[in-house]
Image 1 (spheres, helix red, strand yellow):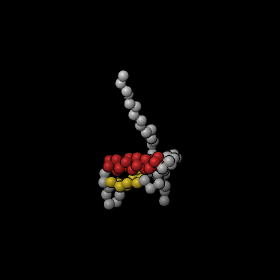
Image 2: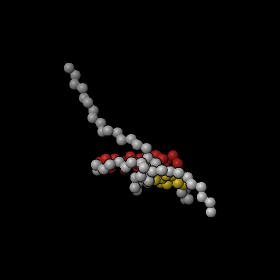
Image 3: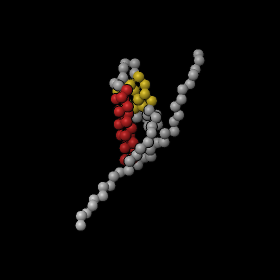
Image 4: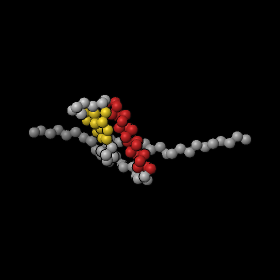
Length: 85
């Protein structure tokens, strides 16, 4: 009779996080995730700033999980305002 190994995998954490992306005056882009304090990146292209931001968020969440800290809830609203001066 053949033994079957059961691989134990860590539960996968998934979530949607708001990211603010701004073009830099000197070129490239700056991105931050407001709900994750200090989680920000800078990159040359829009696509690369998204890639770097995903990696930064993954690392941030992994650190929270390793420390036994809760994952912040994305309680943020993004809107646009018309303002006349």
